[in-house]
Length: 339
Ligand code: NAD
Ligand code: TDX
Image 1: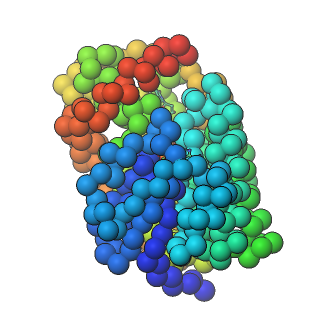
Image 2: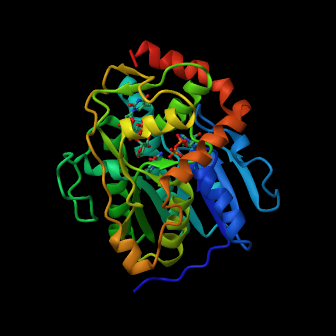
């Protein structure tokens, strides 16, 4: 039996990052009775501009670390749910230095679960399909909630560890928790270290895009607004202790996505550089989201990838001031890694 839960005061961790900030916009635009406290450390990936302009009586920014138990003791009482997005999220960074991934993704989740337990607050955990490892290109299978965990990278192994903590805190301590594992997101406010924004902004800067390996790796793309509606559905209708996979049937090879971006920006489809492959690079991700659709009635709305890509390119073209300040440092880091 699904529980119907109607939160009015929620904490969104990582609400100044890409997906968290899109979720905050989604809640403000679609759920007028809900107020949001964003808890964000403002790492290199967090930008308060992402939630600037939202009504101050509904969205409050608390700058702080999810590992700060004393801060959680002050903040969590009076709220009825924690929606946990905050993480170190980039695979390449986790290969360069795994240390902050262990701290934020594992210890941070532990601290939030302890707070949820102490104050009896509903907890939703935002995770990734990468916990299931990868699939071969010709494998007819897709990931389901029953797929065994087999993470490949320091990033995905810390996300897997955090999922296990959630299940244990639900079973042992009765924390009212749900987990979602989503596929690759795209849309506005994504950091220029990630594949789609990196290539768009390289082209806008007159630099050739960079493709890893043989370019045939497949990612299952979902618009970030569809991820937001799915998380809201699970938060309000999900069954306690359950995991739901979120995906929108968007499998595409990296080379196809890159060629689509190049063509849209008026460049020849082969105007890019092959660069060093990512160590341990996952081959293919693919999500079967039947459980979420059948049991909770969720459906993605942004199913036309071409249209979503056009809108995303337009957003980066029109918002140079948002990404220009961090572009040079991001590319310098990639150059040092041979990528
Ligand atoms: P992001 O890197 O853009 O944002 C992360 C946010 O967390 C930033 O605002 C950062 O300042 C904040 N943060 C980091 N460490 C913190 C700490 N210790 N305390 C408080 N705040 C901290 O990440 P994203 O791509 O928006 O991903 C958000 C979540 O969604 C992550 O949990 C990620 O694993 C998950 N996810 C991402 C994708 C994807 O395609 N990007 C897909 C599936 C799941
Ligand atoms: O310059 C690049 N060239 C390239 O070929 C970059 C940055 C990436 N790639 C490839 C690597 C991947 O196959 O593109 C694909 C996508 O790369 P990322 O954007 O780094 O995403 P990925 O590693 O798939 O992980 C993303 O989806 C799952 C998010 O960063 C994770 O937080 C999420 O859990």
